[in-house]
Image (cartoon, rainbow over all chains, first blue to last red; front, top):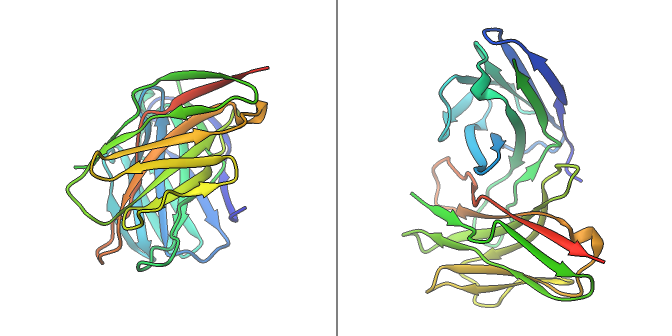
Length: 116
Length: 118
């Protein structure tokens, strides 16, 4: 299994409070991703990083920010949590390379967030 | 934008039988990858199988195989000799091929919930 951990694994918070989720990898992969999973939607990309301090938005980035100060850590912050951000959050890592290399995204165990 | 469609929200199969899960996708690119991920009740996302679009040969991993029809943009997953442990949500996913740039996100379908009956 890829060395990916997420913390916390479960969190309950109140509307309006800031929340930070952490993804930590031991694989030295360049790319890291944050997805959210909601019933009826599959997984959708929030933000991704293609290197230290290099990040970009995904398809559902509103209300979220990210930071990556080290290769191994990718933080997802909800500046002011809302009930619509209740979801399961997955971190993924990959090392995209040219043809012939079997690039695959490996996923962390997920964080279940409930915003009351 | 790429889209991935899984038209079967739920499927069921008898233990030891074969089941096929459907996936279609839409893209204008010629170089891409397709994946099937399994998500059991533990919620862990597990890669089942991967297909490179430039390869005509269908990928196979033990009891799992795909039927990749590039012209039809179809990518179905066949599970042979189904086992109770195969019960899970299955997601089809698309990723564009390597061409420089930075975004190699996965685009997922909404999933198919597979039940295996003993």
